Length: 328
Image 1 (cartoon, one colour):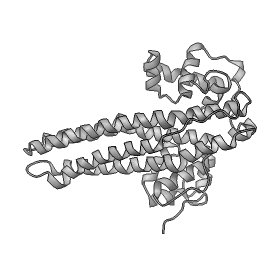
Image 2 (spheres, rainbow, N blue to C red):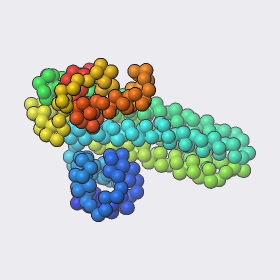
Image 3 (cartoon, rainbow, N blue to C red):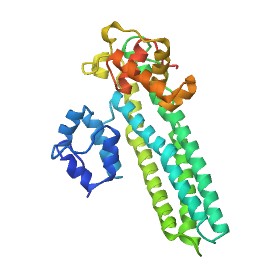
Image 4 (cartoon, rainbow, N blue to C red):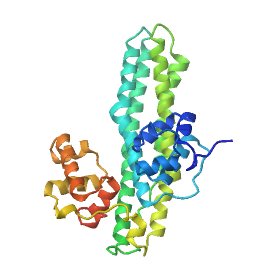
């Protein structure tokens, strides 16, 4: 019997039961040091959507949990941001760490061709994983962004309610996920079953543990996509028609009017357009031919002028003021 995390549970107790959830909390800006406060109290203080937080914690903590309700619109975008952060961590950090360990392992002994085969197989798995991340971003995350844009326009009367939905080929993503996991399994299979001789055992074990953790992370991300993100997309298309924009997107807590009447510069509009399309600061910098530091400075100016900081609120502003459209 598994324990379902509730709004009234002490968050410290939840994180002590499953330390993996610490990274989930921190990714949403919930830093440790909250004492004996409940999940509800901590979320209220940190201005985090408690229902989204609870759903995320429960799906990550147990594979037997199934959420009763779909996510709200803003939470769907928050989930995309969270999943993209997991992908970004592997792209920029974790894959490089494991690659370095594999290379040191290959150079640590005289196992010859078997160590070379481990290195080659992990290289194939890494390339397959990066292709999978790109497919998920294009086939799922970007479509959530476009659907959100379409729903904002529809709710504000700027688009027809019968606009056709773009289907998501989730079985194709599942197939790509299985291919990646098969490649990772091949690496661990070589390390566990067939690697003998003189080599660094500690490095071998470290690689096995890291790959196992990666497989668990990928499995969790797939469940989040299947159990939370896809139902949220369906819910958006089915429930937004004829609802007031304030009711749907909770504008009472997020003002998107320009602060002090300050207008955005053309460069700021370009950066805002890219942010609304879900691009990272690094990608924006490459696209616009400027430094990451300059992009961050523009983002700081944009949030100061608009009076909002969250990506969903910036996205909504961009859509409502014509900076980006549902076709962008």
